[in-house]
Length: 353
Image 1 (cartoon, rainbow, N blue to C red):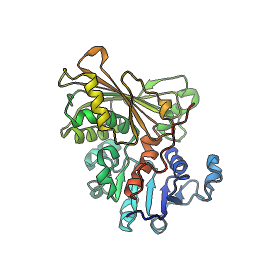
Image 2: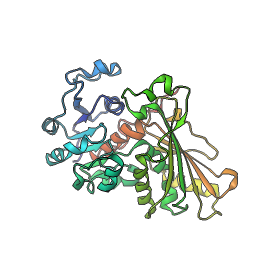
Image 3: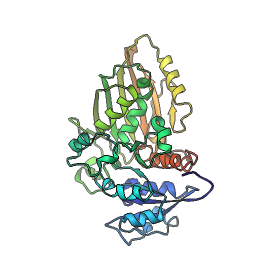
Image 4: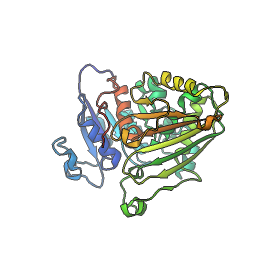
């Protein structure tokens, strides 16, 4: 599908969650895309602007029940902003109708159906599509994304972690059996459901680790890092919940194979690797990136350190978990798939303060 100046029609399945409304926000000002269908089983019939007043004046749409035939008839590309287990049940029918898909859920991120079932507790509904799905980290898979029918949009933690480790693993500079990632996410990363741990009185003025014995993003991260390293990797991954609405910081450490490499050498490596990447910003040496510097923006900011000059490289990585970690990256993938400028609709600066 090539762009010749036309406007593309897109649909969003699952438009009432945080990633769904973030897609709506970003696409409202996209010059080459029109949202034709927005679905929600629970809110069918309700106008979008009634549920999300920030979109008043931008959309004259109401939520509808998700129907593959309607999506196929009215959309060139469909986003799934749903929990796992939804996209995989509708995917065969949509792909058969010629609709291209960007799936923000976890249904197609893992290539191994048994591994997926082990982490998600049920059989995969269409394992035959796992090999076709392209993992949607543009900095890794841009060429494959361009021609894909089905793109599996990465998770937020995997995006922050993989981008931070990417140059080191591509060049085989670190011990891939001793990687560490300690990452903290804003509460929006847990979704929009009403859960006691997500209440303001529970999450505010509080900081905690969770999923330390095993988090669903771990196999996705190890799979992607293994692709970069061309070898299996071992990662210790501990996620944390931070008392903020959106934002994510990952603190990554790895042991250098060649301890004579200087911090300046590593800085040059990162700057060269990401020089042509529009949404990765390598900060000057000595920097400490802040989550507020990426709030609302589709950018990952990185900085490098060598604590006490030891044989360890430390990478700090920050993203907005709802933008580069979800909906912004999904729009980036859509732009690549539709042969549009990759930055289209995504080049606004972060919100500050």
